[in-house]
Image (cartoon, rainbow, N blue to C red; front, top):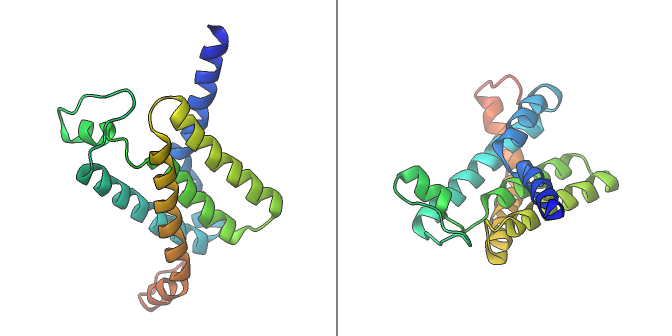
Length: 164
């Protein structure tokens, strides 16, 4: 039983990489050290949150262990599809590795994305398909946003945003 509790705690900890507690402080840090990356992160993460949240309300799929759905917030939390934890860490990782392309860093980011996805399945919060679609949605948003990055920065400069 102790081994199972240890694994559960480990995967719960790994899951934290897919939460705002992880990405908000790091995004704030990047505002100081790499403003261009920070702007990309803010846009990509906000787009990912909005898209995944909308999908959860449109397609209210039950989690492997059902949760109450009495309030609007509970309905959001109870939705299994897509895995927002996986989407967040995927979006964050793609944005980061587009700026920092060191092979070891890219491998570490990939392992964290896989770890968060697996943790969500292990903890019975999501099904495999939820995790895959969280990855696909975030990857699509991230790649599209990074492709549009120069256009966005151009308009921010026109608006005299100081760090653009």
